[in-house]
Length: 271
Image 1 (spheres, one colour):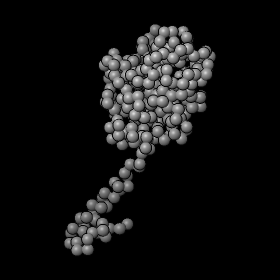
Image 2 (cartoon, one colour):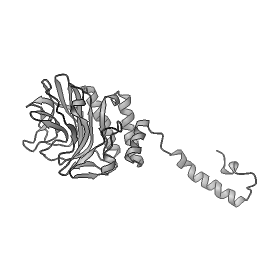
Image 3 (cartoon, rainbow, N blue to C red):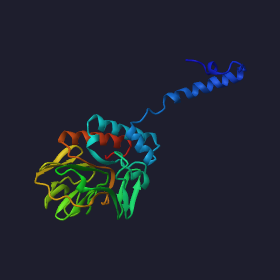
Image 4 (cartoon, rainbow, N blue to C red):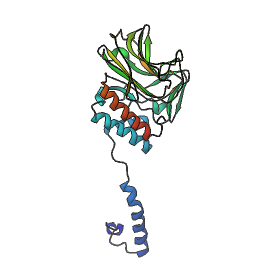
């Protein structure tokens, strides 16, 4: 390895000065080698918009982005909210693009774990009618174990429900629905924590928790309401949420693994 003195001007000959410079070079050289690797362009765009500077958060989201692309899931995402940064501003940004930035209606609680509807909701601005009929999926990573009257993600136009309620306070059951009339996938889990996904492809609908199938139903999709997808209407902390085209069972499993890896890297995974 070259000494720093090799790069100095020829007329710098003071031995004390050279020794000091060489010592500084040796101390800082490992730091230069430890510089963060370049981020994926889409991840970097998100960091810039959301004001994310923390290296742990950047590495976790960059890995999530590249993993989604490698698995062919990135193009299926319509909106993906990593909910990192700990503030209302940073939480509002969509990883997939600058579109569909969250706006808040009513009070919300923001923390390093994500967002919670403290009487309010986070509106995506993505209209359900703009999503592909009979090919859609939604998901939310819930960190709170309690029953609740409101969905973790979704929208509702009676009698057609488009939502995930990880544990309803009416009966303690978990529900996922994408347009079935007066019916939904359901599972009696007794724990609302986890990464929940409901996916519809044609008339078949499946409900997942942490990558495992917990319910399914066959029923034609009803009308798509003229309303936007909302996040965190429940009194649950949501650490990530997404809206996408329909996902297969393999894709739901892959996505669950990627999201759990991301949450673990962020230090906010469920026990």
